[in-house]
Length: 82
Image: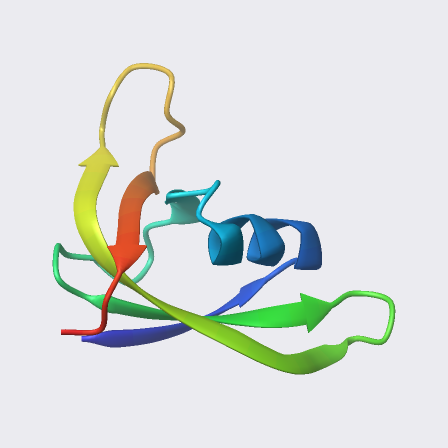
């Protein structure tokens, strides 16, 4: 499955350079390993997308653990689209 998601500029840049290899997210879509994330950079000041995007694949899903808010998941992400 492919998911298109907004991402703030600071987080977007960290994903692009490989420093951020996870997403903390509301698990309202039932994210699964091998799903594809299209992360679209969102400019909150202009209230619009910047046009930059990056594709990542989910390689790990962590949910229902102590300390993690119910309904949320931490997604391990890696480069790749297949």
